[in-house]
Length: 363
Image (tube, rainbow, N blue to C red; front, side):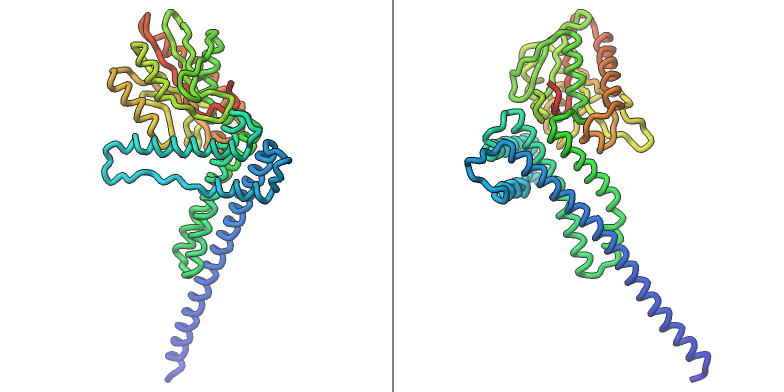
């Protein structure tokens, strides 16, 4: 074997070793970064559990002898509860089924929270239930990320690790947004998502309307604006609930011939858009799974009622954190836009204004 051939073989061996070492270093670097994210998510999840235990402790009688460890175990059991959506192989009636499952989970969660926090009022139970939902989301994100991390490490899959690592900044942004809800829900302070109910409350206050509760956790106020009858609908505050706006709307339709529906809700802004900026459009401004929006659209279509929407833009973090000044300015602008829509309606019209969102801190 001549020297050139030997040198070529040694070069190939060195190249193979270098490629192997480079790949291993890439895997180790990516794994190290993902491990950091997993540890961070675990810490945030644990923080949420601690906040929940502290909040529940305020309403648990010390005479019952329930230790902090026992309380924590009951809360962890609540956090681990899962909602299983109905089978959608046959989509007929799926909205009704989803609504039934969600309503069942909502009622049972509040019952369990009431059993644990026996000294809590109705408003406090709603707030504690929302905190449990926040902790559930944080726990689910942590477990999913940890699951894929362990799978990638188990099989030493570079591509799975790299894909997971590439998604972490986006997951972190979502987790930080959810984490921001811990403070606001603990203290009962309005969040960005309370923009819709706040618009409704400001309108009712401006036109000296008083609220009644014909539907559970949902309020309606009837006022007169420029000679037009306006029904203002929002979730009942200051507890943490989104109410049942579709049922309240159905209640109004059974008593009144509605000419126009205006929905106001928070909307996620795009990067580069200004927080608190307001956009108007057509349709139902409402997020979530879509059950309530479906029923509102069904009602409006059946009766031929136009749908107007007002959107107050904000980031995901702003939607779940304490309401910022910019978002509040957007709320005031949205009030003016709603009034402008009402002013363009024909004389004698009956208009419904839906303040969509969480009523936390909004009386």
